[in-house]
Length: 109
Image (cartoon, rainbow, N blue to C red):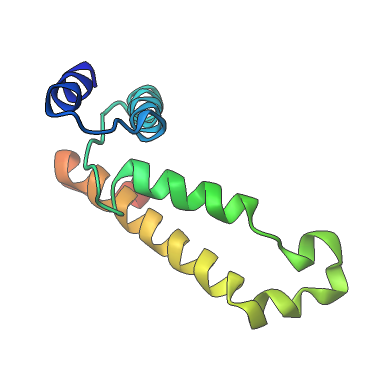
């Protein structure tokens, strides 16, 4: 992070500190929670991309949370499909991340 700030200053470019601090916090959280740093910047399948999507989904308005009888509107707005797609992607990333070093299926343990 310090190197990126230094290079940006030498080039006279603007520095986006919010993105850098978000990347550092994602690296710290992924290292402590998952035991590995995910540093695929700019890639939506990285830990940072998934955490940003999760924050967006948590912050989105869900009708069913406030008014249970209006839960059908979540399907109409597409929120249910987005949540299901993100859960499938997160489960696939977990499976591949576990399967590569261990050579087996995590569900069998």
